[in-house]
Structure formats: structure tokens, C-alpha cells
Length: 114
Length: 146
View (spheres, rainbow over the protein chains, first blue to last red):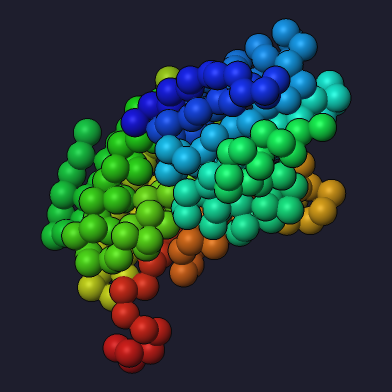
């Protein structure tokens, strides 16, 4: 299943609800375009809701890392919300769990942005 | 183009994203037919996908003149998948450790690590030109048949 991205605003935070696969090609490119688009518009608080993402390959992992570093370089923040077990396990295996700020609850995730 | 001989399926594929998806799908089907559980099927399919991406993106660099050769076999003791490209060749030792603190924020370089994490054996062979990866998932405890 290709990646779909829906965007909404909650208390100044842009929540991107992702659904599908983040893999080499379309999914990674869509995510990159969405993140860069938000940052270019000056959005500094971005929450990626991964509740409906059950597959990320190494390219998708790289894209998440790129989103994180691109945001950081622009004094913006990208956080992750509601990982599926597969994605959670992948982030632990690759030690990326230590890189990202990962939340399970949307309200506390929104409140955590400075 | 595909050829099946005595339980072994061989594919000759173009260097396209569709071929990556096809290799992943065949690996997932083979894993399912071998009775692996859902988690192991995921691992086998993802390892095959990463190997296919290596071959098509990094090996053949999407060159339409270069092909990818994939084979899939259940030997009874193991699932064995080989994926070969016609590229410049890959030295796996040249890929930085993706778990090293200085590499955690790199945008690439995790594919081989994932293959090695998900499969029981990963072998590289230089073909001149190209690289062949062999991925093995044991179906029975090591030594059971020896």
C-alpha cells in the first residue's frame, strides 16, 4: 500500500497522519516533500503519527532521519507518535529509538513541543 | 522472465522499482509457504527487499541495460535466496557501521545491517562485474540434520 499523508493542526503543532509504507521511491519522496514543505513555510513543530504505518525499509528509516536533521537545522522539531510494533522494533534494532522523541499519547505529544 | 526447476524459482528482472517489489513479494510467498511465522515472514521479505534495493539502486544504478538475477529455493533445511546485479561490485566491509554513534544520523547505510539482522546467513560474492548476495534463513535448528 502506498503512503498517504493527511495534515491537521493541533495547538500550533502540525500533525501528519501517515498511512501505508515508507519505502524507497514514492513513500520516502512523499514524506520528504511534506516535511520540507512545512519547514519552508516556517512550521517549527511537526508530529508524525505513525499509527497506520506498518512497514518502513532502510530508505524509509533514512528519510525519517533526514526529516529529523533537516528540522533540527532549521530550529524546528520532528517527533514521532504511536509506533506500530514492527516500526518500534526496527527503531530499536537500528538504535534510532535513541535519536527520536517518541510518544504514545497525542495530547502529551502536542504538549511536549516547546 | 521466470523459470522454476525442482522447487527453485529463478527470475531475470529489469533494474526498476517494480522488480524490487516483485522480489519482496516472491520472498514473502516463499516464507509463508515454508510455514514461518508472521514475524519471520516479515524479516525474510524485508531482507529480500533490501538486497533487491542494493542490486538495483546501488549496483545497477537503475541502468536499463543491466539486469538483476534472483533465485528462491526451499531446500527443506533452509530458505535460500540469491540476488545478483551487474554493477561495479560492492565491498560490504566498506559500509560504515550504522550503529556507531557518529553514523546514527546518516540517511543511508542500514540495508546490509538489516539483512544480517533478519537472516541467519548473508554472503557476498564478487562476480566481475556485479555482486551476488545469498540470504539464508534456517528452517530447522542448526545441526539437526547432521
